[in-house]
Amino acid sequence: MRKTEKPEGETFSHGMVRVSLGSAILLGLMRGRLDAEPTTIYLLTYRRGRCTANCGFCPQARGCTGRADMLSRVVWPPFPAANVIERIGKAYIDGRVKRVCIQALNHPDILEEIISLVRMIRLTSSVPISVSCQPLQKEEMVRLRETGVNRVSIALDASTRDIFNEVKGTSAGGPYTWDGHMRALKDAVEVFGEGSVTTHLIVGLGESEEEAVRTIQLCHDMGVYPALFAFTPIPGTRMAKRPSPPLEKYRRIQVAQYLITHNLARYADMTFEEGRLRDFGVPRNLLLKIVESGRPFMTTGCPGCNRPYYNERPGGPLYNYPRKPKLEEVTEIKRQLGLQ
Ligand code: SF4
Image (spheres, rainbow, N blue to C red):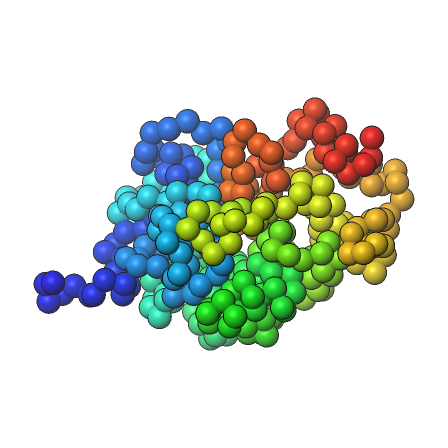
């Protein structure tokens, strides 16, 4: 090992950044066909070795034995950061890109790594920047905001304290706690403002529909936008053998998320039977209008984020549509919701 090198596993970005395959194709860094163009460029901090956390669903987790260049079912090849950032600047000016999302692995130098990436982006572009990261201290979030970050996302992933603990907390050998995440989300709202903080909730980790919807309401009331993901089993992860959630369950939670985040209904208005959503608490004609718009089934997250095929194969089934669902797709969704 040369004197200037750090040992394997330490922060070692070498001016490199990982880029999601779809983003890399959009930026012209790679050749390939895109079934749906991403409207956000997804970057992942580059590191030899894995994340220091140990989330049971994540291929970047410390204990995962599968590929280290994946996050969810997406592959993230590394590229020189300067080249990537120059292309992002051009794509933003051309209107092909609405946002950059920096997904940060958990390691001790991560704040400085994010800040140096954001500084580089800000030298060339005013593109909105989201950072999806571990719970940082409030003053660290202030530094992110002052460097030019517009939004942060701190992923709860789990809908209940117990599932959180089992999947990514102490029972999973991870560093996270439910209370620590909640504290960080509250701090983030104070730093970035209501509506400028996102969390990610994964459906299919063992929660009931009622538990998922209750947490969606809790987040909304805190000023945090809850973005929905469907659990995706990835080879080599601790949860590789668990199934994806039933589409019908996911659709009901999508409708509830839409109603709550648009202030059209509250968790308390809805009825549940043995944890399953039975009634959305809105008149049927309003429900039909909303379902037929297709909007509740489009990818949820920061403005301009469509995460194509993050949870699904292009052949389907599509949990989150990266575009407006077509008429025949809406008909199928209505059937899944029992509205036909
Ligand atoms: S919602 Fe999209 S842009 Fe926002 S943090 Fe999540 S992946 Fe990134």
